[in-house]
Image (cartoon, one colour):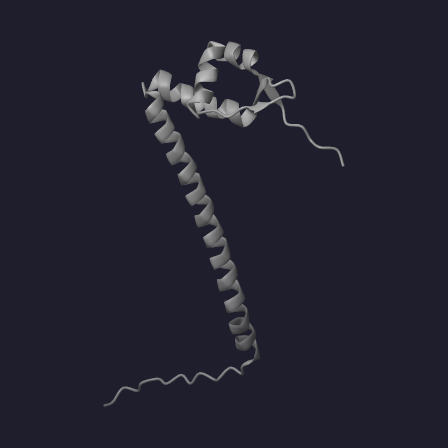
Length: 127
């Protein structure tokens, strides 16, 4: 089975597209904000996920004026929130499975029981 390659972009293409100097991208990498993969020739390769993360970094720095220390904190918080969201979704999924499994015996039990007749008692008016 052939290995599927993800699209990746060289540092010069990313820098040009986002109007950055390549040194800025290298600095983001040194600061731990971006972690591009490397080719066999040691060229930095940015995946679509890397580019999306760069867009968040640029929005924070350019539009909101956040410094790099703040960007790091925000990105870490976003990752933790995504992890927590995933954990919540997994918990809800397992809870729904558990509820579904526990309700099946009750549904089967209810279909096998005989219904008791309901007696309609009307109150008569006393004179």
